[in-house]
Structures are given as C-alpha cells and as structure tokens.
Length: 275
Length: 161
Image (cartoon, rainbow over all chains, first blue to last red):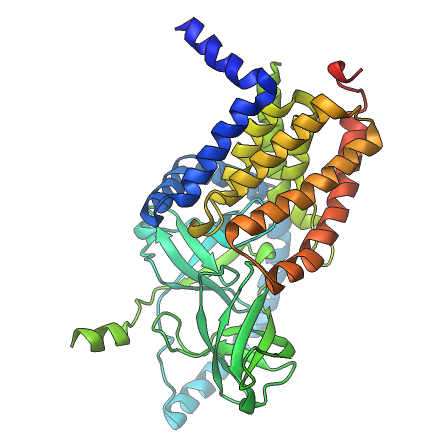
C-alpha cells in the first residue's frame, strides 16, 4: 500500500509535473464537458459541505468584530428614529388616505425574508452570492432578491439553511426592464459576467441618466424594482435598437444584507401553453 | 510545519484576503487578485507539480461561485498557470525579484485569456474586459504581489542557485 502511494506520489512530483498537469487538465476538461445536472450537483455538494460552513465561520468572525461599532451606531440611530417615528405615523395616515384615493396596486405586498450574505466568489468576476436563508425560512428558487438600493438578482438554488443567489452580472440571467421616463420595455443582461447592458428600441429616445426598473414581465420580478441608471447609449448591431451601458444601483461587492421577496413565479406563458 | 500544511494555510489565507481585504482596498472597483499571487508564488517556490495541484484547487474554488455553465474554466486556467510558472522557474530562469514580478504579470494575462477562451467570451466583450478589468487589476496585483514577494520570498529557491 505504501509502495503504491509512493509510486503515485513520484508520478506527480517527478518528471517536472507533467503527469500532474495532464491529470488536472483532464479533470478540468471533464467538468467543462459534463452535462448541466452533473455540474449543478458538483457545485451544490461542494458548496454545502465545504464552502458554506467555512464562509459562515469567517462571516461570524467579521460580524463579531463589528458588533461593538454597530451598537454605538444603533444607539444614535435609535434616538433619531424615535423622533422620526412621530412624523412617520402622520405620514402613514396620509398614505392610507392616498391609497384609497388612487386605488394603489398592492402587488408588492409579499412577505420579505432578510438574509445575510455569507459568501461570494473569491475571484474577480462576481456572479453568485450565498445567503444564510434557505427552505427552512421559506426561501424557494426563483424568488427575487433585492437590497435597499435596488435589484440584486434571484434565488437559483435553495438548500435547507442557505441559498445561492444569481446576480444581475451572471450572463445567464436575462431580465425584462422598463425605462421609467419613457416606459419603453427592453431586456437587460451581462454579456461578459461583469458589465450590464440593455437593449431598447431606438425610437424610445432613452438618454444617459435615465432609470431602469423591472418591467414585471417574465413572471419572476414584480414591476417597479429599481435596477440601475443608464451610463451610455450606443448604436446596436441593428439600427432599430440602442444598446445601453447600465450602472446598477447596488454595488454588489459591498452587499452585507439582502431581502428575499417570498413571491412565487407567475408562469403566465407556461399556463397559456398548458391550456 | 510541513510544506503541504504551510501551503494549505497560505491557500486559505489567500481566499480570506480575496473575500475581505480585496474589497476594502479596492480603488474605483479595481482590486488585486490574491489567489493568483498565491498560485504563482507556490509554483515558483515548489515547482510545476505543486503549482498544478494548488492552481487546480484555487481555480475549482472560484468555479464553485461562477455560473454553473462555466464550471471548470477557472480550474483549467489556474492549473495551466501553476504548470507554466513552475516550468519557467525550474528550467529556464533564475528568478530574482523583478523576474518574479514579471512572471506574475505574464501569468495574470495568460490566466485571463485562457479563462475568456473557455467561457466562450469573444469579440467586444473580451476587449472591454481586457481594457477595463484585466489591465488595471493586473497593475494592482503586480504592486501587491511585488510587496508579497519582497517580504516573503526574498531568498532564492534552493535549486535556482
């Protein structure tokens, strides 16, 4: 047994590492060529058994260090909020009156789960987050994820106590968006895993500084969640379309907490097809 | 401490730095890549076999958080870097300080190009990423990597004498 182990070790450590190189390259190629369900199971098992516990521990350490600092900040905030509470209660009464007046659509009235970000890609191309809420907390796949600033992404895989969030920068996430001023609908994607771009019809006249929100089409994201601001308008391959460079409202690497909207997808198109 | 244990500790450290410190010290959205510094450093210090092994592990760890469709792209590019840097160090070069930093820069570019190739990115997307991400992040990584090499790897490796 020891001899066999020594033999294998020699193969990898002598011959200038060529055997090791071929072995690991083949392993990498196999992963590249594996079907999606196999890849998904590899990622899920490694994430759940190795990375999630490690990143929870790391995240707890960071959290412990910041508790004292946060306590001070919360005391100040508490004092300020007490003052604001009085004004807010007045505002709520006014809002209730306005709701009745304009028949405000209550479609955003979904329960919200607050989640802490416990892990993200330890590389430079950030496309996935791991949060500490899972099926136990009522989180399911395809639930929208957002922050106080705007849309973050959607839940792609939900385990018992943690979930994986697909970010807007993931090239596999295509999103229907609407420009707030012109109300034109387009779609947003990240072609390279980093920068966001949207396509809208030329005639809409979208300009730099315009704001994109979710359109509510597609069934996953409700209408009206802020997505980002248009930084540049460029000619697309087709003259009838414009390509927009979009800066998201939420700076993803800085995210510490997110909100998960407990909204099940409305697969309208699927239902129509079923009928 | 055995060399494997030491490398494992450094491996963990590079990931801790990448997920914490890299965000704190990022400037205009540009952050250094501690993981590639680790892979290059270990390949320089321990040769191509160790470079491949730690490169694969580091790449796979990054793949886990990448889109499932791209699984393996980081692992392949990092394995290649570990092997090439280890070969350079073992066969051709006496790696003094400036050469180590140069090798780190070269490894950074090769790694990104291989990664782009295996993820299927092409054309304008690659050009944009190269100009807006690879170049500035390579410069920042060279600066941080230079500091790391200067502080920790000043002495030449035994077989390079």
